[in-house]
Image 1: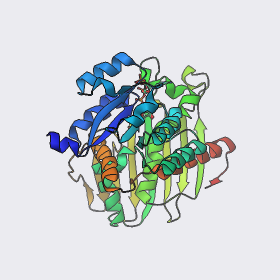
Image 2: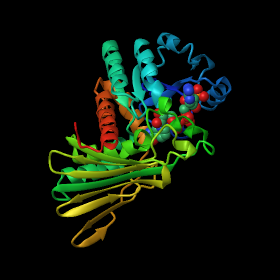
Image 3: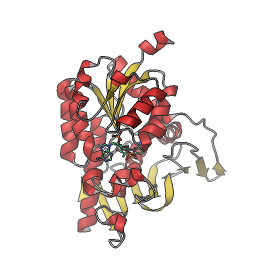
Image 4: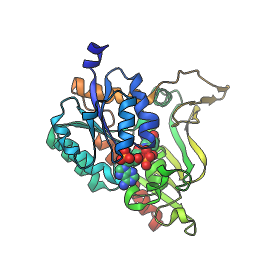
Length: 344
Ligand code: NDP
């Protein structure tokens, strides 16, 4: 066990919030190449309790003030930033300066300039930067992409993608920063609509050339004083696919997409949930539900980052992938604001 662990890449998690503690930390139990060795938190009691639960040495607990001393800890090779988006750039830069590879949560950062700073910092330090687009490591999504690439749907003509949830800072402390523009960088589009956007890009395998958008936000709702609620957008792809995407913070949970080809359609609903993915394919013969095995997408994502470090490979979802989405997010905001098509 110890020998196997020594070949694993050591990760430090920065920000011990809901997603880090409920999804990502438990996932380390299922990784082959990654292990959790350090914690960075502004909450010492929580960090101490989690360190005990995960067998992390007390000397490997950091706070935001002494974080830079992580450079002296050779056990940490990757810093995984799970902070609110406005803090991703600062901690990526500090981690890179400390000589660590970086895995950053999505959305990469609020602005294009922040994303560029993150890419530049890691490049300068000779370190890898990966954005945690977990759906791109998830078996049902990978299967959908493979079917489209094999031409099983015929020519890919249309995509619809919907992501929504109820945001409620009163009920869920993890939603507090989500309605604060300077922390979240935007509203539902930055947080969950980005899954619709990213899916349209990975399903087509292309970059859109043009976007249109409409926003509908009830400004009398105290949740939406700073950030948008509902935003619908279309993406035009060079190969002829049109994608119609929605994003909302005021509807019950939806995380789905459907790809329509000239010969068949493929529906994944949910598509980007943590589990219980459901795939249906329809064509002129009727509908079928191919049986796929659920996999731990969180562990797969962590293992991918670790393997990139072990084998000196570029991550499948590097900083540039996050930057592309953030550029498009801002093009969508511009299209919604002006009511005009925006070329990208
Ligand atoms: P939380 O609010 O639950 O966690 C954020 C943590 O960051 C806090 O618990 C805190 O940890 C730390 N923190 C430091 N400074 C601040 C600050 N000023 N305000 C708030 N928190 C701060 O949010 P989530 O866990 O939901 O989201 C964290 C990140 O993960 C975001 O980037 C989000 O987009 C992403 N995410 C990704 C998901 C995915 O499926 N890939 C799903 C959910 C979220 P501490 O007390 O340890 O200092």
